[in-house]
Image (cartoon, rainbow, N blue to C red; front, side, top):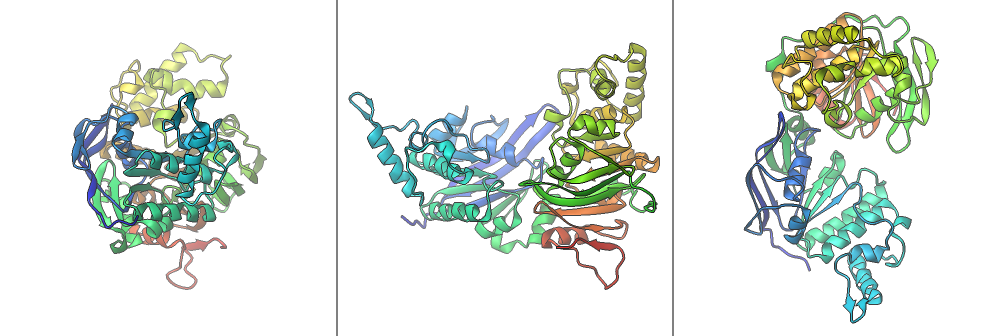
Length: 521
């Protein structure tokens, strides 16, 4: 039944969530209406996932209030949220693959008879709910036999069995092809017409404008604003997501430093790609060069550098280091080739929170040397003291547990760990995300200094000013492919770069403009 009811189903006011050393959400308001698709936008670290987890009962809020249909709610877990009509379908579907489709749809809502569950009637009911979403499949078939797209629709069907008022779709399209996305969007439009409030999260701009009624933009845990999708240009949306802090850091500028690119590059990648993750990319990095990688979340930035480091296995292309072909089948091979990598996920893939600052700093050295060749205590003490002082790690206590440090100091510890291995190429993925401006400035000065001393750097950041300030050359990514390069960053502005990302092409200002280098489409 189509409804014209557009009442506020969800009202979140003044939401605060803090983790040790990090304010994940600061006084955030969010409103979701019946019969709308509302897309939550923001880069990594913006607070999207945290807000969703607050709404769905995964996280308890430290401040603020949540109303569902006008009633104050305090969610102690996901079961409380589901009881209030708030359901979530994640990118990785949280269903039971070993059960049938019907068992998943009717889980907890099975039809019971005098001798227990009446499976014939249960599967018949499941078929009705599946057909209500346009899904004509056998409810007795194994869930595992179906595609991810079908499994997501099964998860949505399960939510609708339980009188879902709010459906949260968290990156549901990231692993779907175009036809599967259209199938999902058809279901979303039907649910919207029935009055279901849909909170949608995606990093694909085309999809945002295809399906969204309204947008809410977060940046660094703060609400930027709420906008009708039809009233917000793509370029303006990109600018709102990325923000500006240039005045805080404008004294740092490495982009104008001349780079000699006539010799053999430190790293040369040719056609490096991975099916389903990123299209083949060519990339060169020369001595002392900072190459920035710019693009929105989901553009392929992280996927590219993980292939170069061997954290993920490439299925096409070749890599040469100093002109010599190398096989990088894993991080150990990269380390042997003097390549170091700091992940964007500092908590899960960077620090070891239960170890001390000293133990974290020497991990990379010990890994490169091998665990049978222990580093002497005197050498450890000297390395730890050097990097605590050089990086300004606070507190300057080698025995402090890393989990108790601020985000900025944790990042400095991770950088120190890899600098201690004397790399020739340093890959930094979002090294300043979620840290204060002072720590950002420290890390950016460090990168500029390392470049001046001859170290090569691949640098990813959602803050475009940061990329423009540090990089002598910028690789631009969009929709998991490289769309081109800016040969110099010095005379390129943020608006130029935002326009390139939003439009999906590098267009020279004048014929023969040698600053620009376009990849073949």
